[in-house]
Every structure is written in C-alpha cells, then in structure tokens.
Length: 367
Image 1 (cartoon, rainbow, N blue to C red):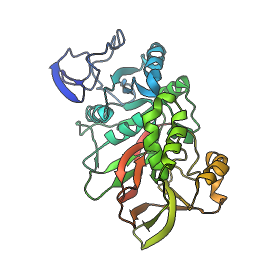
Image 2: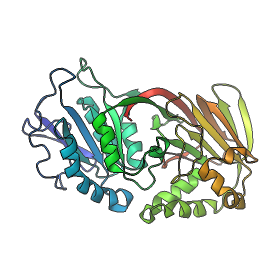
Image 3: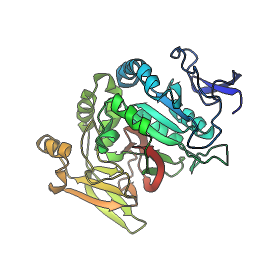
Image 4: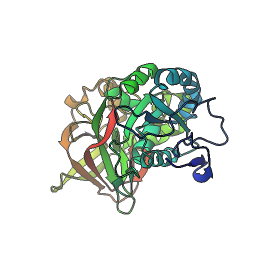
C-alpha cells in the first residue's frame, strides 16, 4: 500500500506523507493523542494468501458517546484489545470529531481495503458507519479491483441505547464483542434505504419511525447526558402539542391506503428502539423484509397503561395496533402540514413524505 496517510482534521481531510508502517486509512484526530505504540510491529502489507494475511481492523470510536463514557471505556479496553487481537490483526484507532465524521472514516477504510470497520459506541455511531458503506446510492468498493475480501461491519456496543445489539442478544459487554471479532464469523444483514423528494438516499440498520415516536426521539437526542432517562424526557416533550394524523401509505408499490389517526408508524429492520422498547418484535435483519407496526388513535394515557407491552413486544394484540411485513413502504401526510417527524436509528431526518425500501443482504457483519 502507498505511503499517503489521511488524517482527519475536524470534518475535513488533510493529506500528509507518513512512514510506510502506517496504513493510508488509519484515521486519527490530530489534536487527540493516540494510544502509545498503536502501530508497533504491525504488518506493512496485506499481500499474500487470504488465509495468512493479517486482518486490518479499523475501530471507529465516538469518544464523547454516552456522555463521555465511551471514550473512557475505550481507553481501558485498548490494552486488552491489542493483546487479544494484535498477533493476527492490524489495529487502527479512528476517533470521530463531530457529526458525520464516522461516515468519512468508513468510506476511506473500505476504499483502502480494510477487513472490517468496527463501531465502538452506540446506535448513533453505528448509524453513521452504515451510511459510510454507501455513497451516491451505491455501495462503496475497494480501490483494488482484484481484492478477494470485502469489508465487514463490526460492533462493540458501548452507547446509551445500543438497541441494534439487543436484536442479536448482545449485551454491552466489550469483552464478549472482542471474542466475536476474534472469531471473525460473518453473516449478511439487510439495510433499509430512505428516499425523499430531493435528498440523497439515507440508510438505516435498525428502526425508522414516523410522527410521535420520531418527535420524541428528536427531543431525546438533546438529553443524552441523562442516559436512558433521555427517552422519558423525549416522550414527555413529544406529547406536548401532539395530534394524531391521517396518513397515506403505499406498500410494495401497490395502491394508496388511508390510515386514520396515526399516532406512530415504525419500520423495523430489527426489533428494538428507544432504549429497549421491542417495537417491531417480529423484525429480523436477515429475512429481507421490514416489519411495519402502526399505532392509531392512541392517547397519552394509553402509553402509560400499555407501556409494559411496548417494552416486552406483546403490544401487537392491543386494539388499534397493526403489523405487516413489507419490502417497501411510502408514507405521506394528508393534511399537508409538513410537520410530521421522521427519524431512523434515533437520527432526525426531517419530515414526510418518505419512501422506505429494504436492501437484502446488503452488508456483511461480524456476528
């Protein structure tokens, strides 16, 4: 590989000459010190047979995640990570410096042939990294057209919610996650893509949602310093001024249907959102379909009385809750107010209308 190394400076990229011992996709923040001897005794090249080559792992860390806890836990974890994986892998640390930085890091890592991009953090960082697997509506590919491996997605859950990890039964245990990475077993997972009237496609891996739940998530994101309490605060603020709305829905390119008095509409590639709420209990990120759950004509007291059902996934039997399996769904509001919130993986995406499609087996994941 070449001797050009790109170092992330804020949201920009500065290209400088560095020794051959560091890979060109080893992205680190210039203003933050990296762990000592991070690249010591590492392989210069990934040439050779696929069975003997060292695996190049890029760890994308949001040091400010979970109110700073992610960065602290990462520093504690790094010595063990190096001792467990360093003999067989090239370990590269990439600290994000702001919104969307993880997207840029991921794209560069894939283009330069990294074996895996591994998220160290929560659903927000995971969401950005998944979006980094795509660019201009297409998957990002290795510069080396003759490469025999693809870049996998990995996860060490250390965030506030870590809802996606729950669908696989994974706990916020970094040592268990490192064992998964050491084994390196891969499985293909589905990814959702969201398109609007004018915007570039946006990708999600967990749950996209509309109206009240999306509004609550928007407010919750402002209170993450309070941990999981942020979801309670977000829900309370979301209820202020909330009105159920009539929506038009088109499923699998069929005919438009009207759903009156929709409180929330959730599109699940996986099962959980909102800090452990099992909102789309039948969703499976490996079955090539979304589960769509629609709540209609809910009042504030319905959430109080039925909250336990929403968390344990038994709400599908509740009156005014419906579920269906789809490959695509378009959603528009009837009133034309332009004020119905849309989010995916806890990230605010604006307002309706939107179209959601499944991309089956779009990404390889270390499972």
